[in-house]
Length: 361
Ligand code: F6P
Image (cartoon, rainbow, N blue to C red; front, side):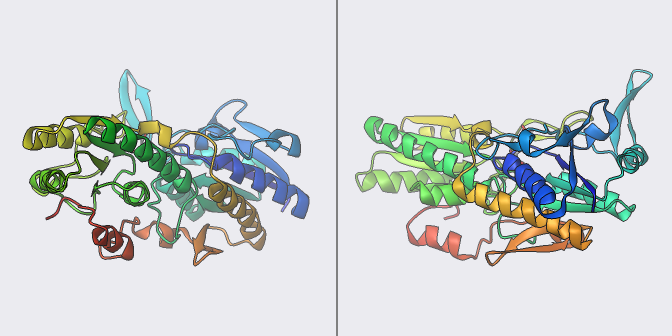
């Protein structure tokens, strides 16, 4: 192995730089290998100056930094690239151009760090003969075959801090505070931070809720003398008799964006209980900032392992954490079924035992 490439794709997550740094250091120190960075996800292969050398100097000091020094893109799939033809947007397969660019770079391996979209593209490139190794990234923690993705712990910590802060103001004003959290169709950020941050109600996509059950929980608290409540609501949560809420539907240009369910819950609760209610959408704060120690540790292990997996020639595989060990599994296995909160698992059971409502009374 003489020359490897690395790229970051999809939404950013804290720990991306830690993976890049570990890839560069391991490749140079253990294999005497040259490392090339591809800018802005797969797009870098098609852009002038899209490929840059990564050396010890380039990665110095990036371990605690959020974001990604390589840039990223969460639109743009080389197998279905949107381009304008005669003023009309058209979808074309430009994967052969990427394949040509990878060939021209003489890469012995390409390490792709990303979520399901980026990894799926990696899998398809591998099926066409590109030597790809994947590293699972997402704050949503929704990738199969791995106990956890890096970025999740930092997002969860930010969400928990927000719940702690909402607690003090909720108590002072005798208010209901609703916090909307990211996660798409997976409720991990909401469940984990809801428990860690002492929420009274947790609404996650995996457990459809009833508005009235949420209001009833608040009334019960009022009856017990607790005149404030904290609600952690996942952006993908949906009522039993309704749909998820999107602030922007998808179209040819944009992927659909979830958002707005917390406001609906807040409006209902205020009317139904008479409690003054405020809604906060935590948004991209969950993706930013310095990674936690756990995410730095995990991201570093993943980056270093990905280089070893490439050296072994186990292409078409993704590194993963299983029972505290870093292993590697085929892309097909990781991407077969997206990971979701186990509604019968001990996390949900624990929350219920503590009296937390999932709005499904
Ligand atoms: O997948 C990560 C994530 O942050 C989701 O939790 C969220 O729904 C989405 O990305 C936001 O995407 P964007 O950055 O495009 O608004």
